[in-house]
Image (cartoon, rainbow, N blue to C red):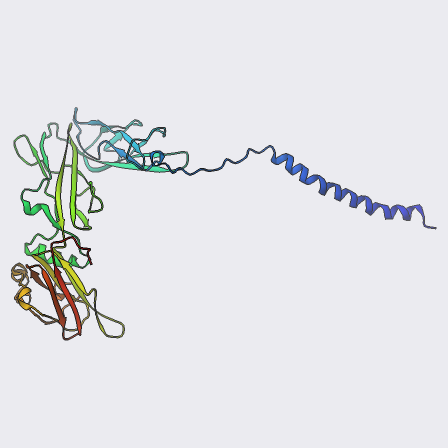
Length: 379
């Protein structure tokens, strides 16, 4: 017979197995009991209503001119959150105002600026951050003078002084070098705004901080601070505005400009890895009276021969500036020069609408210049 000790020895593993099973069985119930104490996670619902989307924050003043002397030493900024429709949006936290140069300008939590010392381009930032971590900000730029009696701004205008100044050519990608050459030659090829900020005596007020913008961003892109025209995308009508706050006087102006086909365009001769030649495009489009420059990046001699040489006119201003190699009209004799420099470029002017084919016998390449004042797609 087996002893009771032996029998007991065999029963103990069974009890341990029973204990393990009991624990394994109770764990899910404990886990469920503990999870039941945790708050359920709410389902995120995206906001699709444009009237409810927080898309921007705008300040009432973007360009400010102050003095260290009262009453020109303070101004209050207000920041307005806007939805996707450009409308004011409520229900958001208060904006946080920050001066990036507190040695010259202080700003209170509610946006009151107070000057401390003269300086230029002092940035004041307003920001709103929502509970969903959506952040938008806007920046005002401040100039501070120590003049206790600054000039009073009475005339503020960006309206062109002549009809010609209100007509700009659209930006062509291969026209930058040609524009630089023409600008240096005295031909205004790069569009510019003409700001007139005058006091009550008609004298210019220098050094004003001014903010710029466009009502037609699909036509023109402009630098907000300098007023430099960055890009003219396509022909059309572009409305550009400027505004300033100068020593207690707020003034603004809006001017309308006509954007035409490019005034300046260009071709680039390039050398391929297999030593063959290539042009950057087969054709360019310019407006009547526009300019085309051929730029040699190949490092080898190239030439340009026109089907109608009389249509390709000399650019006398460039001839006078750069010398004999840039003079004359019609066909362009072989040249190599240095790509990307004036030596590597040759230009012609085209006055009459039409299509003007050309070829390069040295490279075997062909192309054409299209002259038109119609708003056809740019190429």
